[in-house]
Amino acid sequence: MAEAAALGSAATNVATNVRVLRARHGMSLGQLAARAGMSKGTLSKLETGAANPTLDTLATLAAALAVPLPELFAASLVGIEVVRAHEGLDIGDDAGPARLVNVMSRDRLLVEVHDLTLPAGHAEVSATHGEGSWEHVIVRSGRIAAGPIDQQAELAEGDYAVYPGDRPHRWEGLGPGTARVWAVLTVAHHERNS
Image (cartoon, rainbow, N blue to C red; front, top):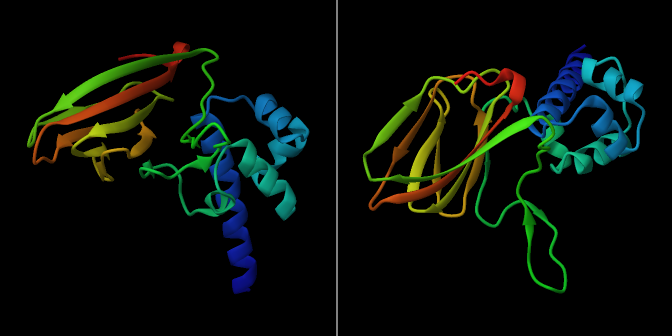
């Protein structure tokens, strides 16, 4: 009985996480299905929890979403996602090291890039950027706390974080000096309301 509950929970996590990651990357069901080499129907069943995918299928899907396979089984991806400096998918070659930190489609997305300076102790709160929005944060120097009000993360130079922009979120410079941050806001054109 406990094994059946655990399997059900894992299937629910996979279904939810695939939907969240697909939305985060701005991909349609058809785009992700094509990228993963599967039919839209199969992917649709997987996202609703009606499919029983093989480990190979899940590994292919994780690669198409540019995430490690265990992330598909995580309890929740709805909060903040942090990629620490020197983390990400290694895509380096003979020319030099490189890392893929996140993937997003710009099809019908508004993308705003902000260069922010946060003095130590300075804090800002944003109510919302609209339904379906995501805020991507890259710390260029210094230390900050950022994320949804109830789930902030401390970030240092080189760290990357992404979280939903459709609920209250907060920024704070942690010092000792001034922090420099790039913030990238992504939101579908038809959902923009801020």
